[in-house]
Length: 501
Ligand code: B12
Ligand code: SF4
Image (cartoon, rainbow, N blue to C red):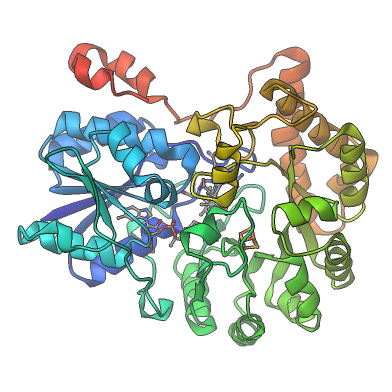
C-alpha cells in the first residue's frame, strides 16, 4: 500500500519569508518509515507549478492513501482544495487530513469538503499508523482512536481521543532525507541563508485564551531529551550544513532541567550553530542564571509572547505574567546580551489610541524584533468560543486567520478595515524611527542582517506599494486553486468546481 503525505500549496510566512519544510510532516514521515510503510512526501510549497505537479503526481502514481497536512487555520482551504483535486483525479485514493484546525473543527471540515474521507484528530503518529494498517487489512476503522468521519448515513462519527505519546524520545528523527533540503527556497532569509525551523516539544502548560497550541495538547507539555535535540542539530549541521534555527517549541524552557540539559549538551558538541528560542517572561526571570549559558550555546534571541503593556488585558487573555515581569524579562535579556523578540497582540475590545501610544512607548524601549499581531480567535481556543458567543467574529474566511488580518472589531474601531489600518499605522510608527533605522548598522551581525533584510526587502516594498502603488512582493510559486482551474480549462467538471474554496 502506498501512502503519500502532502503539504498542500499554501502561502509561506510572507512577513519573514520563511520557507521551510513542516517539522510535523517530517516527524510523521520518520515514524511511518520506521514502521516500514511505503511512503512518499510532496511539499507543494516548493513546486513551481504546485497544483499541476500535484495533479500529475496523483494521476501517475495513484497512491492508495493520501494524507493532507494543515498546520495553520489559514491553510485550511488550501488543504480542502488539495483534497478536491486528488478526488477529481483519482477517486479511489483515500484522503485523510490532519493538523490543529481540522482536529478542532472536524465535523465542519468534513461537511464542508466531501473530498476529505477522514480527519485525524490530535497527534498524528499512532493514529496514522493504525489507520493505514486497518485500511491495508480492511479492518474496522471505527476501532481506530482519533479518527473522525461521516458514516454512510452522513452522521458524524468520532472514534474517541487518542492518548498522547508519553515519551517523545520514542519517536525517530524527523525524515529530513525525504525533504528537499537543498532546494534554493528552503531557508530563513531574515536570519541567514542556512536557516531552518525545528521542533523539539509539544504543547505548553499555560492556558492563554487565544492559544491553539495549548488547547490542542490539552495544556500538557512533552519534550525530546537534550541529547536527542543535540543529535538532531548536529545531523543538520553535518549532513545539511544548517547553522541557524528558529526553534519552534512555543515554550522551550518549561522546566529548568530542559534548559540546563540543552546548554550542557550543546556546549559539549560545539556545533557553532545559532538559535532563536521561545519562552515566557516569568521563565526568563526564573532562569536568569542560565541566560549566559544559553548565549554560549549560540542562542541569540528569545521570542516571548509579551502581548500587551496593561495588566488588565494580560489578565483578560490569561497570560499569567505581569507588565512588570515583561519589563524585567526584557531587561535581563539585554543584560545578558540576548536579543528580545516580542510577539504582541493588539486589537483588544477596549483598546483606544491612548493605549496604543502607551503600548509603543513601552515596547520600543527594549524590543529588537517587533512581532506585531492582531488578536485572532483561532478555532478551538477559549477565545474563539468566547468571541463567537458574544457575536464579535465578523470575518469567518479562515484565510484571514493569520494574525495579520482583523477578524474582530474593537469598541472604538467598529469596522475591520479600520482595525487593519490601525495595525499598519503602528507598524509604520514603530519601524520608521531613526533608532530603528540605526539598527541597519548595528555591531550585532544578526540584528544588522535581520534589519537589513526586513527593512530593505519587506518594509521598503510595503512603503513603495503604499506610496507609489508598486506591486507588492508575491510568492513566485503560489497559485490560487481557482486560478489553476481556469488555466487548466474545462477538464474539471462542474460538481468539483462548485467545491472550490
Ligand atoms: C513550523 C511552523 C511554521 C512554519 C511552517 C512551515 C510549513 N511548511 O508548514 C513557518 C515558520 C513558515 C510558519 C508560519 C506561520 N505560522 Co506557524 N508554526 C510552526 C510551529 C513553530 C511548529 C509546527 C510543528 O511542526 N509542530 C510540531 C508538530 C509535531 O505538530 P503539528 O505540526 O501540529 O503536527 C502534528 C499533528 O497536527 C498531526 N498532523 C499534522 N499534519 C498531519 C497530516 C496527517 C495526514 C495526519 C494524519 C496528522 C497530521 O500530526 C503531527 C504529529 O503529531 C508552530 C508552533 C508549534 N510549536 O507547534 C507554529 C504554528 C503552527 N504557526 C502558526 C501560525 C499562526 C503561523 C503564521 C500564520 C504566522 C504567525 N503569525 O504566527 C505563519 C503562516 C504563514 C501564512 N501563510 O499565513 C500557529 C497556527 C495556529 C493556527 N491554528 O492557525 C502555530 C500553532 C503557532 C501558534 N501557537 O500560534 N509556521
Ligand atoms: S504561554 Fe505561549 S504557548 Fe503557552 S499557552 Fe500561552 S501563548 Fe500558548
